[in-house]
Image (cartoon, rainbow, N blue to C red; front, side, top):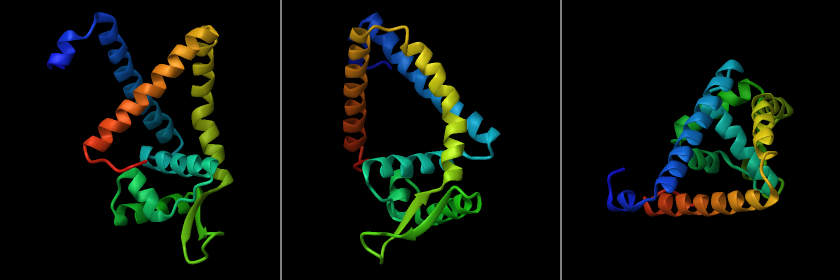
Length: 163
């Protein structure tokens, strides 16, 4: 990055940003590798993850909201859902709140896949976190929250959809 802000960035801040880039890149590579090992594309895992996160927050995902969340066209979303249904990872049902609305739900098969894919990563990250004090973790937590907010603001400023 050769902008004025980058030129004024401290060496430590530059290393932190480089670390974030590496973390993002390695995370993407991990999802791709373990997904492939389990017969799932990264978009498949992202879709299941989005539905699981929605369920945890009490939010139902329709095919349309899932497509918007993944930045997919309607035909691509339909193909994705058909693939996930054939694999036994999701099912389309009627909303309990509005029977006219179709919602996407994850199955126990998808939850098992999620555990198989992400439990080994969680164990590795837990080992890393165990090496930090509560005070250090509080600082990391604050940074990640603020960094996430900054990325969200930048995404919205670039015309990206609201979360």
